[in-house]
Amino acid sequence: MRPICPPLMLFAAGMGTRMGALTANRPKPLIPVAGRFLIDHALALVDDAGIDRVVVNTHYLADQIESHIATRGLIVSREEPEVLETGGGLKRALPLLGDDPVMTLNTDAVWTGRNPLVELMEAWDEVRMDGLLLLLPVEKAVGHFAKGDFLMDGDGRLERANGRLGPVYLGAQILKTAGLAEIEAEVFSLNLLWDRMISDGRLYGMIHDGGWCDVGRPEGIVSAETLLRAPA
Picture 1: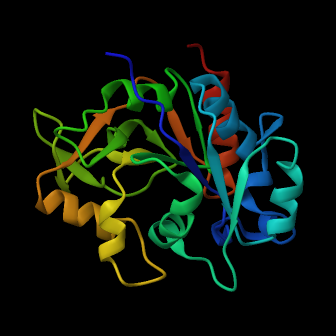
Picture 2 (picture 1 turned 45 degrees about the vertical axis):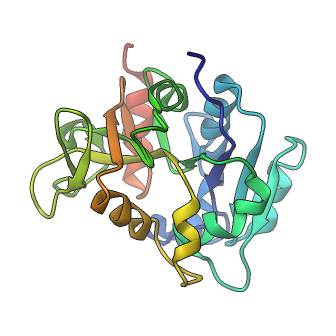
């Protein structure tokens, strides 16, 4: 069966406060890593996966991001006067995204190995799943400092790690979005939707076939460039 190719949302609205002075005058997606802006690392994955409907949310220094992507044919969802977090931002953008399910991808990481978006599309099973998250064991997640986000059973079904050692969410996923309409808040995290999917036994995960580095802090730039230089 041919994999689905859903619309995709790039999360690019955050303030980037953990980057300190580096984001005083530029948004985090426009920080260069290995000669390419972070958002361009993400867009390279999008292009390689053949995704043709992409929405980018913006807020902090939005004009800079929108100017940078102006020639790309992307759809912008500007969040004003406040940033809406991942759940609120995705809910706001649903009329622009169209078809369900949708994919989301963070713009503050670099990847090696298989294209994470292709991995998700190939593994998606709408009969069993309401959500599919891409993960790595915590010891392989460069730049991540918590014990882990989830526990995964033998079928890939997820539950919260709650302080136990488990794989880390990498910021790439496929989701059915109907449940967003049941959340009345305007500003909220996708964690609320995930918890509902976990309760229904319909949130799944898979392990990424490659490397990943979170570029959420200044030291993450060096770690990311080291990862990208490593032999495949």
